[in-house]
Image 1 (cartoon, rainbow, N blue to C red):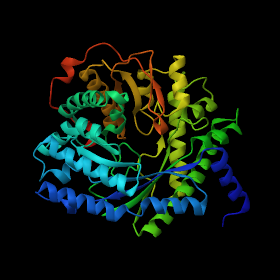
Image 2: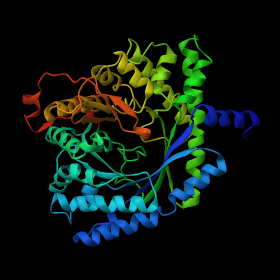
Image 3: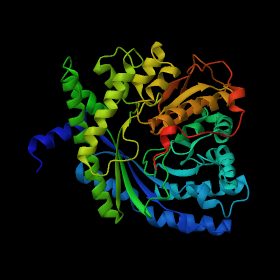
Image 4: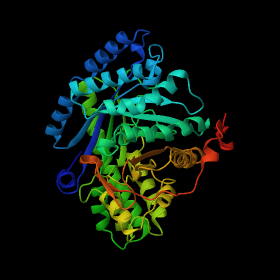
Length: 454
């Protein structure tokens, strides 16, 4: 039973501490749309998504009104399009036509984003995979709501360095294609190692091939709630600190479970997972970096930051798994620079560098996220950054990702304004030394020894 105190407590979390359900994401399988005729394929994709998602936004708004819980985004994820379009697409332009169809239906049903313009190439690339990857710059420039991701490595298979090299080039081309919007296309493109099949968070969401025909996944976020809880135990021991985070994560996850079950019932779609991720926004008081400061750091990036983030991430997961039988996705703490005012402040103060961020990704939920870098950064340097992050994920058996934005025409000392949830970011310095010979070797980095578990 829920008592009056818990109702009041949850209301305070929503009204004063920025608690929200960040997204309801409807995953839709497009495997039954596969067709060798491109026009028929596009028609099938449009019809399948429209029929499945036409009530998604309305349902989300109804739940928000009924329970008084803000639901910020309603989104769709689909089967990786490289798999769906392989039989019909003979050129990059053919794949771009599918991206336009996805964007059109996303507008029609009213969702914020649609993820799944994706390829899974951790061990090798088919002709369709490579065509889709090469089409990404044009596809993201031609659409508004489509998001793209490419999984280039895993603990089981190693790192596909040919794909890593190609993605460095693709990210730079995407920046060029969208330079009039400060290279915003790159904000909709993620490179993964160990990508989860059930991630509701953009830009990396896609509907995995192991998933049901349709499924509802919910992403909950509450950095402000955690920070407020920690303010009440300032100066206490690590044991008290950990218990406070864990209990708060439990409460936040229960909110997500409630929304997910209700959405599942109203839409007649199976419930998938709750992703409890402390995903910040540019709003004051909604910052993961501020939690790190509350734990005891002057700025995110100060000595002790990696340990504090490891503690936070672990306690969030422990609290979440007690609150729901189906916690999945990424679940933990996100550290995007542009979307977190505290992170921006740390970069501006000189406390946080790209290298320190990379170290922090060893213990957080994702990786180098929403980081603006100089527009004249070489493609091989971007590939080197990707390779480093993929290696962290592969060796540590965790999901890692890279979402960097080379802002064409801007350099270190300048900043870029993306707006909305994407926020703004200072251009961060990139190590100037070359990794060309390393990236140009070609082939694969083998899987680590601990991958052999059969």
